[in-house]
Length: 282
Image (cartoon, rainbow, N blue to C red; front, side):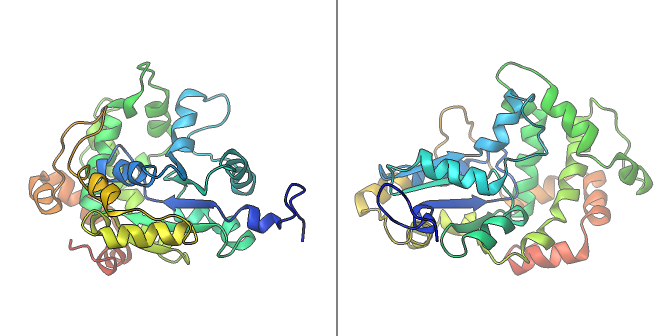
């Protein structure tokens, strides 16, 4: 086994401070940003927030929005960046199904968890993120153009007889896009990665501490005073955010008929069963 020339530790040991939190997509959902900010409240932890998802928005010459850096190289990179931290992690840049190389190369060394969200709330943020042009600070439309050209199965939506739309009807076609992506939950839940509803984390300090302990191999803990502060942020928007209510039952009641029809036609029975297995009522 290769060793670190500085302290003689194994290369695997040198990666044990790296962790990943995967998700179905961040989309400026406050509870997802809350989790990252909560973890970063410890001076011993450095965590990226959807870093590799945002980067291609501003550096499209490097890669497209559909691509991500090689996970083995990226893991070594953040291990180097975070060498002076007790733990360093990336949240939401990757989906669970992308993590196989890490699971094979560093089993139980580089820790991974998946944070889930009620699909109705997830869809709300997915659509809103795109309707607001993904918070592109320069106003460029490239990322949304990519979504229209490559991330939507327009022919499928047409064959299903769904409500027609134009390119300018962003709320309609991104709703269909989001519903189609919901079917990916089937593959995600087959990965040997613990799936944890973010709704449970915001309600339970013990669960938050359990997750931190797992991701950091028990090396990082949070005192009661810091936890008190962290949990005052659960309902408080951060800079750049607005107060948004995303109660799943209320969202479902507000759906127009065309969206109800699209949900039934696009989301598979297996996907719905997987959401319910995660504890979500549909």
